[in-house]
Amino acid sequence: MQDPLEQIESNVRGYARLFPAVFHKAVGSTITDTEGNDFIDFFCGAGSLNYGHNNRQAKAALLRYIQADGIQHSLDTVTAAKVDFLEAFERIILKPRGLDYRVQFTGPTGTNAVEAAVKLARKQTQRSHVVAFTNAYHGHSLGALALTGNQFYHSQFYGSHNNVTHLPFDGYMGDYDTSLLLEKMLDDPSSGLPKPAAVILETIQGEGGVNVSSATWLQRVASLCQQHGIHLIVDDIQVGNGRSGKFFSFEHAGVTPDIVCVSKSIGSGMPMSIVLIRPEIDVWKPGEHTGTFRGNNLAFVSARAVLEYWNDPSFEQQIEDRSQIIQKQLRAICAKHSDHSLSVRGRGLIWGLDMHCGDLASQTIRNAFNAGLLIEGAGASDEVLKVMPALTIETSLLQEGLQILESAVDAAIN
Ligand code: PMP
Image 1 (tube, protein in one colour):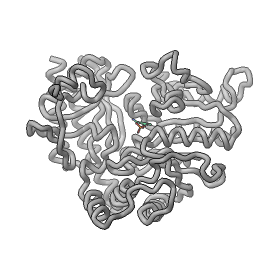
Image 2 (cartoon, protein in one colour):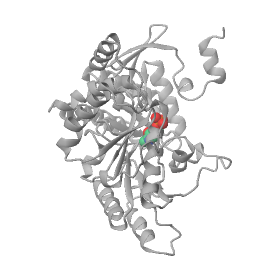
Image 3 (cartoon, helix red, strand yellow):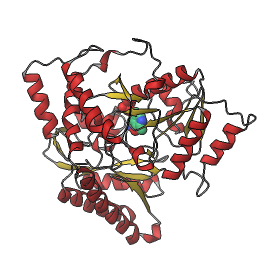
């Protein structure tokens, strides 16, 4: 058999190249390889492990459930595990936030939720066009890919640009308020922009480089959508589930999207995605948008267990405390290397250290890996280091990881 690491070097893509190790165990924010090396995890399964690896509560609930021969997979049928999740989601998440949404299970991946959201908006408005934004990342299936900004993921042969216009995201043009451009184009019949069914956005672009939109910009976009009868779809796949410091990222701006895509950490490591739909616009006929693996009951059990964090009134403060620790250290790194004009942006527990140079960022990622820290790059040229630890990371481990990061930056720059 070929050595697994050789295999990684020779033909495996993506994260396997970034983190050349064979991993086999993980608890909380520590992941261990087969050689017994521990790594602090600031990568967090690209945002799918907000509650840490093998979260204690989720694991206990899963073990109990499997032990009792609970139903594993049920397609669209009603099960006790599904009802439990829905009841808790309504009681713990939606109701206290004054949100009224129908929940549609869309399958295992975030992309599945994006596809469902766009299809629903198109069907309900009887319009096909969608506005997305520069640097957006919404997935890799042909529909979701059309909404994804970075040209790197496209090919002229995919035919994946249909019915989508990308407009500049907040901050893309410096201080210019890009919602004015959306406004102008929607109002002007000669702008070339067909009236869209939906505007889709991430409030903080994760893969796009930790670009944080302002509350004012989001409010303007939301109000333009409302004025023009366009559905606002918030893709909260990466920055929902508490990543921004609140359960939903749009809570910071006080806007209420028509449709919300939720996935990644919702199942705490188990594959699951949902869309939340304003009841008035739910025009699906039964069975009209289906898919086999939308009935993963193990995901419902795991998801139900971690919702309990949101019953703890101090949970948001715990996230904020960790957020402050990160900000302080990243700003210190920038100050130390002021001649390299590094910059910092983020919110909650998603922070970007912009190194303005892909090579410098990738050297830092390699240095960090060699010293026991997993961290990922983001942005158009992977020039931004994305600091994304679990919401539940112990503060001592967080500090240790940040220390490794600082040394990794020092070594890359010097
Ligand atoms: N939307 C956003 C904002 C994402 O970050 C991602 C994944 N990085 C997706 C959609 C696609 O999710 P998945 O990879 O689970 O299909």
